[in-house]
Amino acid sequence: MSPKLTSPAAVAALLVAMMAAPAANAADYVQAPGSSLVFATKYDGEVFTGQFGGFQTKLSFDPAQLAGAKLDVAIQLVGTRTGNADRDGTLTGGDFFDVAKFAQARYVADRFRALGGDQYAADGTLTLRGVSKPVTLTFTWTPGAKPVLSGRATVKRLDFGVGGGDWSDTATIPDEVAISTRVVLVPAK
Image (cartoon, rainbow, N blue to C red; front, side, top):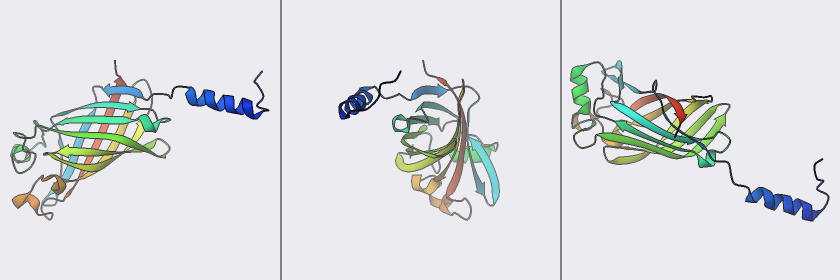
């Protein structure tokens, strides 16, 4: 039988006990095989897509405890490919990713918002070519033994100095680049 909360002292004792209980921790995950991180943009009106050389994701996430959520993604720029050797060489060169100086980009988020249903937003910071700017990743969370985070973000390339100089004409290459990801996760050990 449950105790009845008939006195202010009983209510106060229950509140103190609830406040002293440890908060639930977010579950810790790492990226598993089958994950993808791609970008899409246009060149002279032609849409093209590409994949980065690789990426590694660490996530602490519990939909019921968003205050403890954290996302850390290391993105390898070396090996970025679009299926066109000339374009790939240009992308990894000094005018775009400049992989000789900046071999990796990083996205870190520790502010998460529920958008309703299984939709969430991670408000984080992307560091690319030594420049750090806010970027929001909106994503769907599919729970399970191997949860899946499927998300999208928009990055303004010129904010990071990507494609500057002769390439800064947004009629040739739009400023906004679409990023999409599907990250299969497993519990961290």
